[in-house]
Image 1: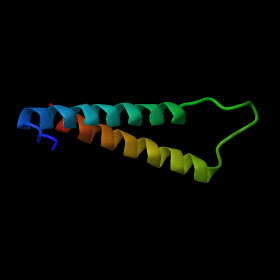
Image 2: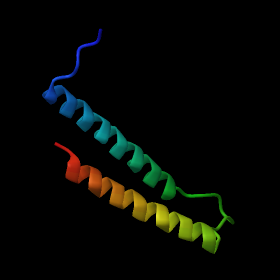
Image 3: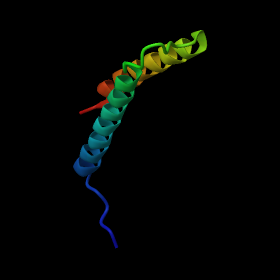
Length: 69
């Protein structure tokens, strides 16, 4: 039988997972800042999607920072 985590271990592991989530969101933001080959441009719909993703990433990262230890 696996031992249940102590409260300190539970919080530390949750904090580590939040850190991983923050790093994953940073990686997603990096992709949105990527260059693309000359001659390729975003459509208006794609530009709107990118802007919505940037806002969502920013909000999620702020929420994670607020909840970290």
